[in-house]
Image 1 (tube, one colour):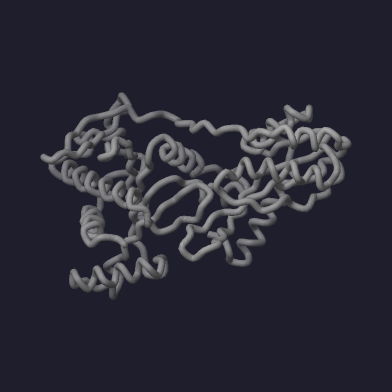
Image 2 (cartoon, rainbow, N blue to C red; image 1 turned 30 degrees about the horizontal axis):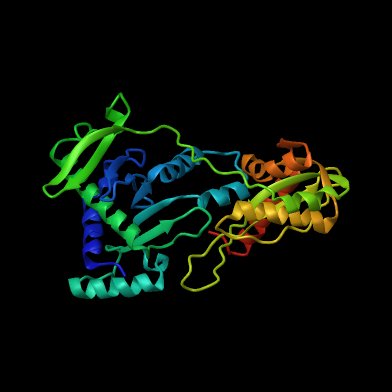
Length: 348
């Protein structure tokens, strides 16, 4: 449950209208009480979505850059764009309409409004929505105490930033567009208030991911198979969240889509897999696919770097050549699934 004090801070942040001064690229950082670094981005300059987004550590910042660098990507496929929307890694405090809220949140907000004598009638006051975005999962309301603590500390820092800008200026507060050295504000809270410093905003951040590996039993099972088919393969996240339990955050299922590059025949998709450890599960499912179909590919065309990484050890251990690209068949198949689901109203 969200505390009344956290709602108070959210509405205090809304009142500053900091989005009229800062662009989403005008980041500032907060050193959290546990030593972790949070990167804050204020959203709303375009007048569409008003929020404070908090990206924790390298993985969060890498997510921010992925979204920022893809904002104007006109050549992105529908399947890749759908997945992009579910790739964020952040905690967000936003201001929404009643229709955008979860039932539990509405219950908490109703209780808060009664205590504070507030009304949501009319078009003036928005509901406060605290959302957790995790790659591979649907956005869900924040329930984790650590995440709530992080976003509360970020709101405290945002209020401090708004006050500093009001008393001085955006440039004097140390924001990026005014700093030729690429430094941004770093705020650390102590018993007396905030200490202001600057730090270099890291450039493109890459989070290293491990390559799934075959076990010896799998290698033995695959060694007896006959070489057939030149395959196109794509690791595809289905942008239709599923939920096993009502208290569980909905996740995005995924699978490896395969097609015969010569005949154009699509194979029956591998088993649906869910996070965590979905890439290792994807490799296991592809191994089982080959065993069930009783063949080893002559060659694999991987749709992208991630698919290639998942199948890398498979190709190395079985001596299967692999290239990245030339996967029109599976790309179109994945786009078709996205279009169908979108037409059924099950996406986004």
